[in-house]
Length: 66
Image (cartoon, rainbow, N blue to C red; front, top):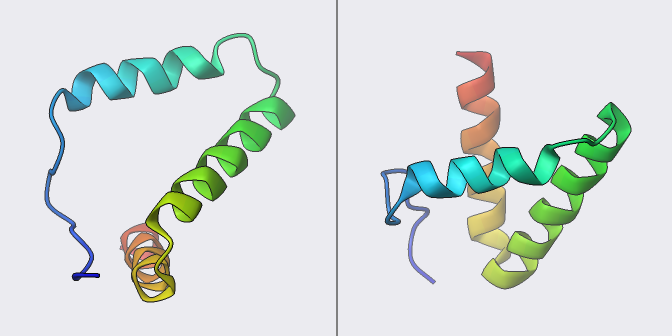
């Protein structure tokens, strides 16, 4: 698999963001965390490449510390 893509790479990002927010409607904080964890695991399974997943974790950690 290729390198991790960190630039915008999908159409209708605003539509996805709205759908993501809507998926959280009415959930408790615990429910929000559970939904996010399930989504992460589903997407990680879809990606299926350990090196890409580790690169994504590093990128997320770096973005969080900056």
